Length: 320
Image (cartoon, rainbow, N blue to C red):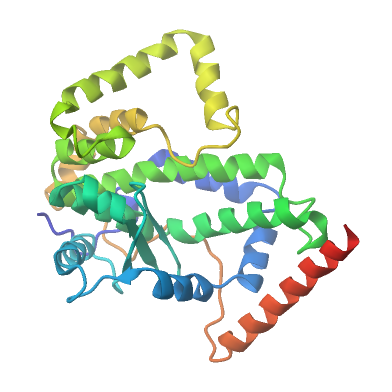
């Protein structure tokens, strides 16, 4: 497997990811959400939950997975090493969060469905999010939308700030961020078919009928999906499906679209240059410029903030 010593996230970051983040950060309300996020939300509660309710991967816990994980960390030149957890959940899913203490959660559904090299691709994909600084923005999006919908104007002053445009921008950026993480997976695995196969299986793979799934047919499905755009009405339907027409906005592009973007990059001169060692070398960039306190009294501050939030929730409930 290739090792990309000193590689910057800007070497492989998708331009649509970069553009979508710039658009998001330029919208009114983003700076306030960033400040409020740092003020009220810390990673520690999430880490405490994971420590109590999952298996932390290490040399003597899922040792095979841990070895693959460490190799992916090395290949993408990520430091310090993030924490990896395995969650008992049959859904084939994984995610990365955290800024000061980044971590990855991978469901048992992934481990049961994919072979080892495909699992490696999933790990590299999630590490790509960390390398690109995506995780803090993802957390901000999750928190801002849940806080605004649950408590509105009465909490944090976000009711008039979290506009539909800002929510749309958050989701648009999240979808584009996946394209950069897919590129990270391809760089680490160095085999396009393996990365595409992992996407196909996560989309609708079956352990029992795995031998009846064809990657070539899935690629053809991707091409057929793109051909739908010849009808303008189909383009409208796609836009609506991504943005809440079926009851919820989608945080990921459809797998068949991700295939198209990745196949295009796999034959690009940019990708070939990176494989040959010609890439931008600098500290990881692209993360949101949000400061956070690291003083020893973090735990006490966090406790006070949680109590304040609970008091606000209780006050609202009494008014109902």
